[in-house]
Image 1 (cartoon, rainbow, N blue to C red):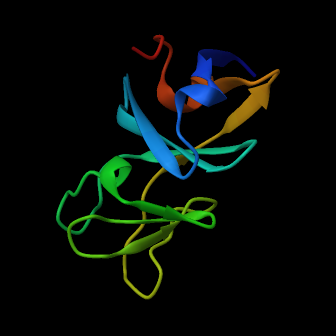
Image 2: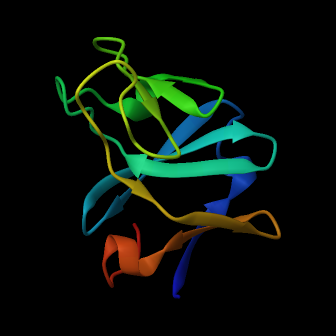
Length: 109
């Protein structure tokens, strides 16, 4: 598996998010814990809200527009008929690595 280094975990505030541009569109990185990061689509399927501007709680994010709640493990909307894409991400020495195959062959920008 090929991984793209997209930054240090400290670049994302605790319970916050950062957006990277990829061939599949904008991917939001959510820091849910001291050493826990998730990667998912930045766009809510309901009203296209920017999920990176939502509230991060537990391993979930709430859309800032209409309060849809998404599980960052599965991408499934809680109590709604919707889902966002999630992408494999891992940490290595504090560096955030995003799975290259999942987002295309080009580097994240």
